Image 1 (cartoon, rainbow, N blue to C red):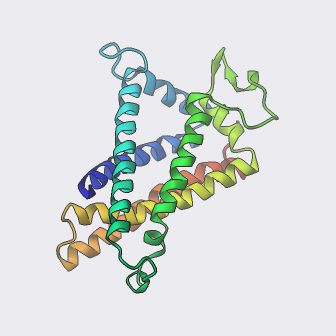
Image 2 (cartoon, rainbow, N blue to C red; image 1 turned 45 degrees about the horizontal axis):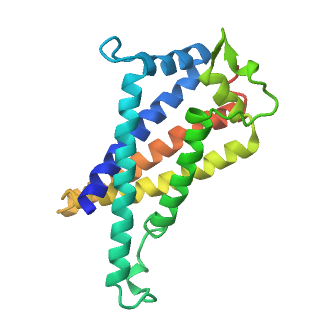
Image 3 (tube, helix red, strand yellow; image 1 turned 90 degrees about the horizontal axis):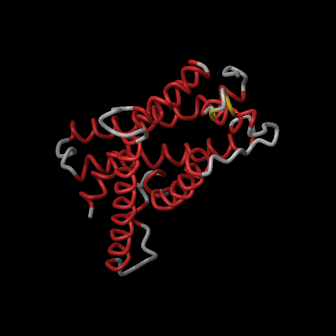
Amino acid sequence: MKVIMAISGLYLVFFVLFHMYGNLKLFAGQAAFDEYAHHLRTMFMPILPHSGFLWIFRLTLLVAVVAHVWAAIQLTGRAHAARKDRYAVKRTVRATLASRTMRWGGVALVVFIVWHLLHFTIAKINVNSGYSEADLMVGGHESPFLLTFAAFSTWWMTLLYLLAMVALGMHLRHGIYSSIQTLGGTNTKRANRTANLVSIALALVIAVGFVVPPLAIVLGIIGK
C-alpha cells in the first residue's frame, strides 16, 4: 500500500509541477496562454486524434488519483485497527503540522479538485457575473485565458484558490518526503536531510508558482 501511495503520489507531483508551469504562461498574455492550451489538444496529431494525448494523460491521472486515495484509505483503516489506544498522543508530539493535517488536507484537496475540474474543464463555469459567455470568447472560440482571468477577478474565487494551495503545499511537503522514504531514499543522515530539503523546496516552488498568477490578476499585473 505504501509503495502504491508513493509511486502514484510522485506521478501526481509531476503533474502539478507541469500544470504550474503552464499556469505561469498567463504572464505571457492571452495569445500565448490560449496557444498553449490549444497545443495540449493538438499534441502528437495526426498520430493521435484531436485531444487524444490530453485524454490519455487525464486517464493516467485518474488512475493515479484513485490508487492514491485507495491506498490512503487502506493505510488509515489498518492504522486505526492496529491502534489499541486511540487517545495516545505521545507519538505525535514531534509531528510536523504538515504530517498532522495530511489526511484532512487530502480530503480538502479532493473536494477542490472536483470543483476545479467542473470549473475549468468539465462544465467550464463562469463564476464572474461581470462577464457574459460572449465576453469569454475570441473568434468564436472559448478563451482559456479569459475564463481564468474572469475567475480570479472575483475575490472569493481567488481566496478559495489560495487556501487550496496552502493545503497543497503542506500535503506535498509531507507527501514527497514520505514517498522518498518509502522508496528507500532516506537510509542515511545525508539522504534523509536531502529528502527533507527536496520536499520543502518542491512544495514551496509548486505552491508559490500556483499562487502567483491569481495574485497578479488581482493586483492588475496580468491584464486582458
